[in-house]
Length: 301
Figure (cartoon, rainbow, N blue to C red):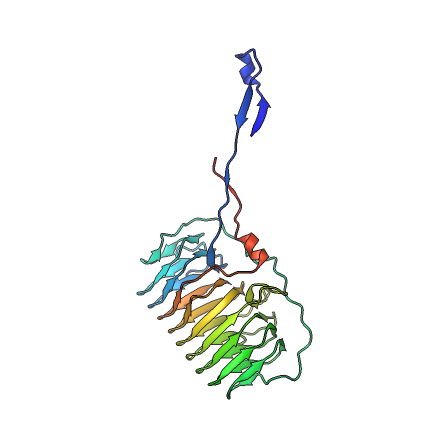
């Protein structure tokens, strides 16, 4: 509380008086777990067909379009809060969106790319098509293809996909604890992550190291027309930050991401068909993101 000598009041009052004032600021905590960074796209966040997106957290979209969030079909988008620069289209967006917000910056813009060395030799082959198989951290310069009827295990560590895709299909079971996948700038349109065909995938990010809390990280300088796809009856537990700042992410055709502690940051995010996301929680473990989630204080009094 500040005390300042009065000036105008001395014209009326002969004695010295003090003026008191106070300022009250409110810190707005952003609990969003889906961030769309595209500033102009129609349907930057799209929920169509029978997609049912139920979140224990919020959605934030940078698009200034009048249909920046587009809900159509029989599905719904439900979260703790929905915020968008432009507006929403559709009858089932809950709660009613807060529109006209100021554009938000990339919350992980300060996150440095990891360091890596030349392609690692030896180790398991990139194709896992038989029984159980194991992958070790390192730099992969050719695609990783998993279509086994057994279990593919990713040992803890950092996996560099350098011009390489990660494809998981069939009835594969894939597990990995304390793992991060970094996709370099050297990616083409076919160098995406695809999880399809009834695969069962459980992956969790590390709590320390070069990318604490980060499960997937696409180099922000990537300019290829890339969409990472989760399709066709897949069941996923993806625990960590999924960071695709300049490329898209799509859930279609029966894909399920239930009870995951995830934050998705992408250019655009699409849910089509009977895709389902539910029981999201806020992903743990990254100081840069934690600071970004605390929005600038607002003067309220």
